[in-house]
Length: 428
Ligand code: HEM
Image 1 (cartoon, rainbow, N blue to C red):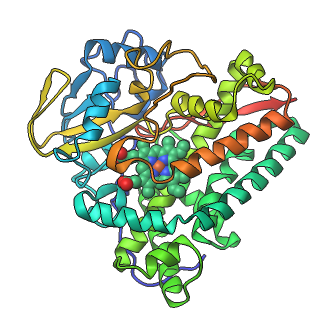
Image 2: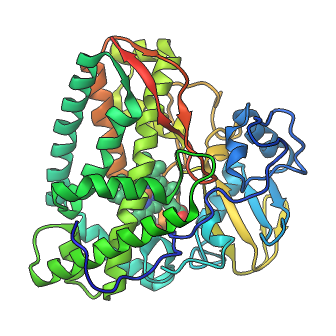
Image 3: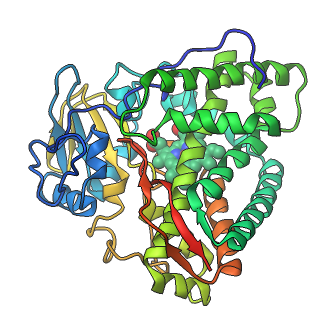
């Protein structure tokens, strides 16, 4: 990998603490029963909570009993609000005057004093500066660039699924999903093939962990390594611009740090979320054979299947804001200065917004899920997120006849991302 010059350092969405928190109700190694857990002692900052039994029931209990719940302070860790109903989630996302991202947009940064990339990286910038930066990023994602990238997505996925079908028994997460989004984003940024494997390893350490006790130093080092990498790349592209997103950003009005943070944000925004949605889709097909048959037999379209996969998997469980004024959400007053988390994973299963939300229904319509967020910060990579899933759905439908589970999947450890980092299945 290339590496050069001074890089911005990270605590940014970049911050540590994806696994912070006191254990909810069980000791180490125990699994919490979320169907009966005391809502007073529940800890939504603790990654162990999301390994509990009956997560769907917990989200329903919160929506019904504590739709806008205050997670009390714990030791050094400040309190925060958790919003779980669909209508309340929309209200927070819509209200960009009174809710800001600039002091962090996820628990890791909201609870740790903010984000070092504030007002330098799109996701943690608001107001006129956000609009200006977003316009530039949209311009960088030109139809020409996206066209080339999407073509490669289809070819790559088709090859990987074909190889997986030949092998039969695979770990879908490692053997297929790992290799898709990192190459999509690297194609977008025109990153040399030789550097991609290392970037994937770094990306895997940034937001979640495959182990229950991740090494925090390793996580911070991974973020800094990635920033250092983009520092070098931005300098190279400024000197010799090409037809890629890094070149567009590096030759724009953005300052050096802003270019580096925004390149970094495309990897952390788009890699793990896309990997987990793809793995979650195969898990859902394996555990809902009738839905898989309906897809296979052409009874549902790939487009509607993609939307239901996005709703069902909700890989980014929450996003967050800080309240700039007193705001009433639902029937609860959230005081100015509060950290507020919006749980897309819960809102996407709200029976007030979705008919039979616990049914995986590939024909579901309408399907106005919040998986890509809503409003001014709506996911910039939604087109690519959808394109990757669509190519995967079309390719498995064409190449694979049966999908069967082969042992227990392994879940990532995080209070932010949800999904599987190991998924043993048999493709027949
Ligand atoms: C299934 C895959 C994906 C999911 C679930 C996802 C989810 C999200 C969500 C929920 C937000 C809104 C955050 C907020 O409101 O604070 C967001 C923003 C963003 N996403 Fe994605 N994303 C995905 C794929 C991608 C990809 C592939 C890229 C890049 C190539 C990307 C880049 C971004 C960026 C840059 C933002 C910030 C937009 C802004 O603040 O204006 N995402 N994403």
